[in-house]
Length: 309
Image (cartoon, rainbow, N blue to C red; front, side):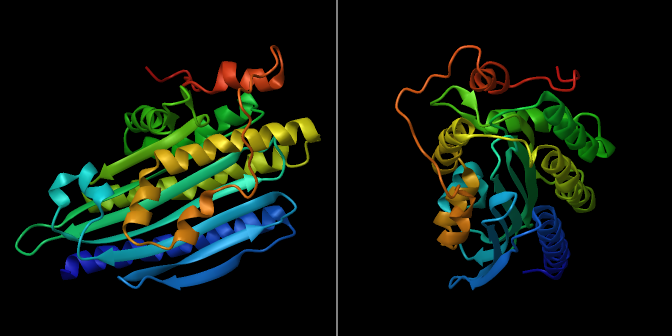
């Protein structure tokens, strides 16, 4: 690995580890009961990570915040299918990925990820890029929460150009779409990949901004919704809708495929799965119900800020 690539990788790794620390500390404080348990692991083919999971909390049924750095002599098939020019290159991949499954059905599930890839081949220039984003999956949505979420998303990328929020918002809507269901996984947010323009410094700065925006986007929703009263009906609907989360992660998610195909740690890769979930054949929400509102208003792409063309 070239010295310049090593320096870039080390710089990104320092940020990612600090980001994992700050998010875990904030979530523990917001929960007030449970703490993260760290599981440090090594990958036989190269690399390792720190998996941190909080379970049985006062607010969060399960929250996982993972840091990983894996490397190898060959890119996995999921990556070369997306980027054929990477075939035959060695690679390093590092990132922070988190998924939060709250107890309260009125507090949305959420996911965030920021990552860096670099692939090299002797005699050729390195190929590198950043990716990431965050998205929100409510079961009983509040429009003011969704607007807040998108306001923070827009503020995170606006300093880099007015075009980024509309582009990354649409990318998120398109990526987190369950084609077999004809619905989005939630209300979106930001998603980007293959970012390497206008250069390393600017691309890294945008990725950092997105990573650092997650807590300001999510913690206000925790404070608003964590104590909302609910009953068995809402709990059962939450468990049913969690099934969509599982379907997406196992059928469509490129990160899950990359992790499994690169020989990553299965427990850490599948940390995103909810601890409890149920499926129900032929479910239809009662017309006019809060459950029906989710389907009617929130499971197709929407222009939440009145600016997306």
